[in-house]
Length: 623
Image 1 (tube, rainbow, N blue to C red):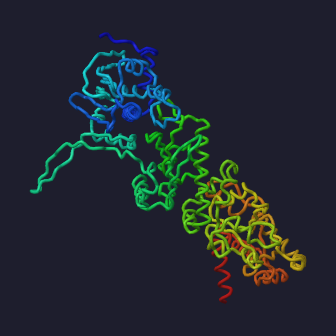
Image 2 (spheres, one colour):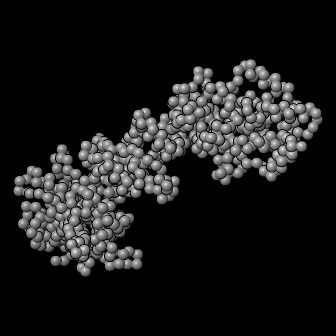
Image 3 (cartoon, rainbow, N blue to C red):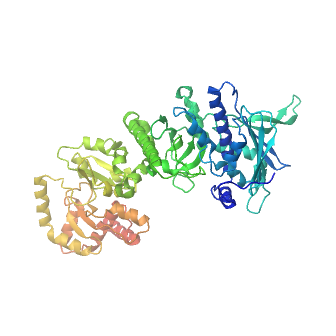
């Protein structure tokens, strides 16, 4: 029989389907298995209303012949007659599954995978020619469809039972592609597990194994084995799943030696229906902030694997979430490799994000200890998410964010902080530093704590950036205790400080002149008790921010430093005595400034000179 040309499209279109639509040649097996699964579904559905059609046990068999260079995929599904072979395989991009679904009653719950009618042609990515032997249920005749991509032919054939056998004649190796791997049963089994593990029918393959005899010898045998799991854990009834089952799935899937901190297993039905099994890890992966970390969730459609890193269905600020989403309603492109960017994807992402957020809120309220463990591992991610996009997501995330604070040195939310604020407190106080221990030792902490105000500890590099974006919480603005005037003094305390400043006006002027290239201002302060001096900044760039920017190699950006002096400290009184005796106070003033730098965690401009000054003073004291 002479070859027929493909009905509706040219050879060029078929070349595109085989070589351009799919970016990964491994996909061919997924597509052919999905077609076989569809055929089994169709036979099962028809058997429910037609007593002449039997359906006892559907199965899919995959066999290889290395000598003949063939892969054979057999199913006992509905099969095709001559017209269906002509229509479905002779017409590119016509979907028999799509037509079948159209003919079903609208109330039917049929779950047919195929949509586009091009999946079959992915076989030509790995095969020179393809043969299809098929017999329709209730028909006595069978037919053979054959194509080498130049055209196709259909002829009468013999087949004992209804169903379809597809035989792929695998291409020879090229310099760019080794097609031999598809003749290896182990490779095909790997592809089945990756892409089609949850097809509902058993997928059988001949697998080599060993039988061990009583004498210790072994004999190599080839057995027919079911290589797919069929029912994914997320599709099972929750009552049938043990906690160990959930944990084992997570640990095996993500190569994690630790059990997850939290699982989220739920189902949504509506405009976008899907089932999800999500996990919050108990610890941050070692490669979390590297390019090796896989972002996104695993995406399935009707149990068929679609994508390993579906970033489109979860927001980046929840990038720590791992798991699976399986949806029946996704609009995929014709190769089932790429998601269409449409309202369905946006609705799915919105729904997944909403569930993650509600789970975290519930943990924060009812499982505080677990939430704090989570926040230790991934709290910075939420903060960055709140800061990112100029605060576009701050309203979503702000109540999930926590800081350690001076209140019992425990984690607190902003909501909890505000609930404890004193009646006269107008601002949310915070102090930034490398660690909680160093923040506690800051000279500026004494006065604030003595006044009974709670201070948030900002130890993440993103914390101060975050306050510049969110600006306020519950109408309360953020205020660094390391900046400007905190306005904590009573009227009497203010008057006392003004008096002392006036009395020491000439000395302060001299100190300003000595430090004119190092600080923008020098003033007496009432915020110091134990310490003689401290550095603060104005209401723009903070000293801690300067350090962070310096670590980011932004050397030119500096805080506007102000040196504050404790008028009641013995060192200031001694300095005042020296000045009244008309002695040079330059070295002492610079030494005082160096002390302020050290207490602020800043580098000394000349460490050797500082050490020499200290040594000289020690010698004077000893003598």
